[in-house]
Every structure is written in structure tokens, then in C-alpha cells.
Image (cartoon, rainbow, N blue to C red; front, side):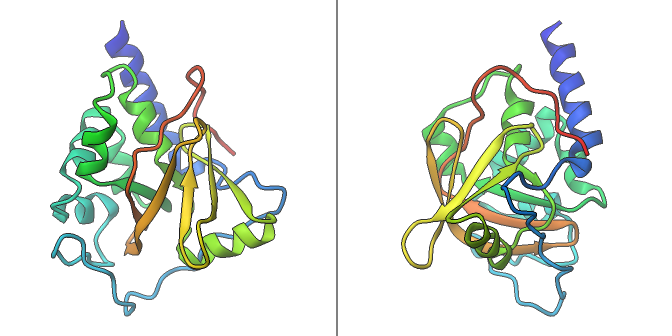
Length: 200
């Protein structure tokens, strides 16, 4: 029964993730424009991140994200990140997952979907929505919960989960064919009971 419920949530996440509301600030934030493939991507763990690959292919090439890739596949959420939708992924490193501990199989899809915000939010778009929202931008995740983006010092953006845990962005703006990845140093977790995946 739990496996069926998890599979149902993962399938719902995969189907509706692209249509979820991008942000819920009292302003109407605009995601980043389509990236130019000529922009230089940062490397992760010494590996090139290619702008013409999808999010899953780039994450699979990163030696720092094997746990994330395995969990995305196990949860069924990976298929959404290979689609033609537009997503922003806050990608915890292997070290961040080791510190956070394992999620149960019944909550894995929820944990993975909470790290994904529909729409492309590169660092400039995040800075803009933080400024427009008066210092704290509320981003609606594919899981249906909220991540809060705010400044941590003059140049660093921090992301806070619903439990009050904060992750700093360690590597910004990994541009992918279907979105943006920001590498973060902590795993963010949803709180409260399971929600339905947000839809337009």
C-alpha cells in the first residue's frame, strides 16, 4: 500500500511538476529568460556541465550528486527532469545528504519534489524576486510547499525550508536544456502532512 501511494505521488509529481505555480510572493516574479547556450557553465567536481544536456544528464555527470541522482530515480521524479518542462533544482551534495540522513521510501518522492521549483530561476531572477518581495521571496515547490529565498550577506543567496533550516547556494547557475541547477550545502525538507502537487 505504501509503495502504491509513493508511486502515485511520484507519478503525480512527474506529470504535474512543470505546471506547478512558480512562486507565491505577493509580487508576480518572472523566471529567467531562455538561457544562451554560449554562456559558460560552472564545473561541478571537476566535471563539465553542458547547457544542451537536461538536468538529469548534468547531475549524473557530477561526482558530487550521486545520492541526489539515485534518489530522484528511486522516487520516480527523475523522468520529470528529463522532460521539456522548465525547472529550478536546488541540488544538495552527497555530503549534505549524508548529514541529513536517509529518507524513508514512503517520503522520498516528497523530499525530491520539494527541491524543485517549476520555472527557470537563475541567480539574477532570484535576486530580482527577493528584492521585489521586500527581502524574502516565497517559491512554490513541485511538492506543493514553500521555499524562502533571501540574502545571506551582500552577495550570497540562502534558501530556507519550512522547518527553518537554511541552505546556502555553493554553485550558482548551472544552465541546462530544461532549467537551472543551484548546488546547495544542506538538504531542505517539507513540513506537515503530505500535500497535493501544486497545479496551475
